Image 1 (cartoon, one colour):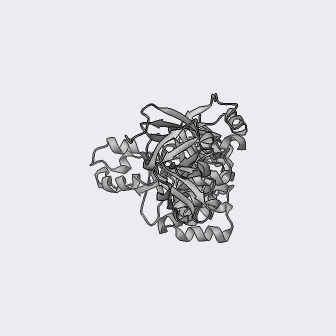
Image 2: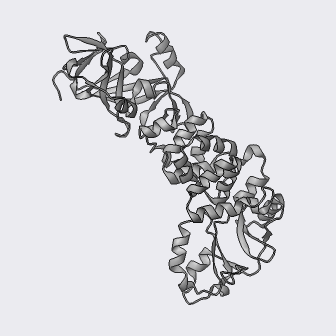
Image 3: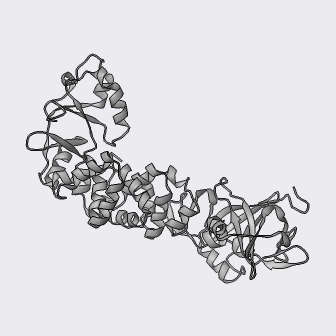
Length: 424
């Protein structure tokens, strides 16, 4: 511990600290901001103190140069202001600053599952290190700031920082700063989509841009079509293409259908051949047909294979689609006529020398690809099965209408976004 630092934990409010000065005993300047490392645990440390000078711009000292905090005189004592280093614009842009980036920002409170505005910050000084401790989300924090600390000091809406995700409101700026929202990524994707629903669309786009790719794609799938389009159009082009390739083909096709043709074509050009072909096949069918609501990301194999022959191939295919409950069996790769269906459980429990044709159920309810989407959805729901296969006029399998797609089709529009997704 450096000389002059206290061992007792003290609490400081950011709006108060921003009225403090920095002093080395000879010179005094006004504190401009505090820099933190948001990736360093549940209580991120303050890493630098910043101030501004007309001739040199923004200058910085590492927190290790701080000798103590004097609340009575509202001063932060440092070793030497002359040791301050000018911050380049690029470094300043990448930094996370408490006043510039976090105070008054939109945040997601994971403890109470809400999106709101951050009104102040509480920091703890423990063994000489100042750390971000709590987010103040209450209205009393606003009163405290307006009255310069005279009123509103007892806030009852303080949330530990480990439950907070802050948003800049600028996807490009957040990507450049390499922000990462690790905490929210642990939530179910449907819950993430619900949390993003009330946010301004730029803030929602920022969150989607920074989530891990798989989580972001599933979150997009769970959004309402309107919010999905708003968010997608604000994403960097490369990121948008990445998420499209991860989304279910039917939902990716729906999203591309909302875009201008030139924009849709541009995104399709970024996709791998297999993903592009699956989406293009779905785009051929009108929205009001079974083909328009089906998914073609299903597992198909030959009926005459033995269980032991498909193990390795099946393992690889199971990594790809969301819908893996059924495996559809066909006669030949060229004709691809549907012969029957076998469940994954039946294959796992069968002997290697058993033939798939002997395990399959040949008595199938099928949906014609140009059948009305509403009728097809009702048939899936009435069947009480998780999906029904979709075929053309010669019995060639083209895809399947899943129960979640069926529910989304027939449910009232206000409820569709909250409908559970079995395959997502």
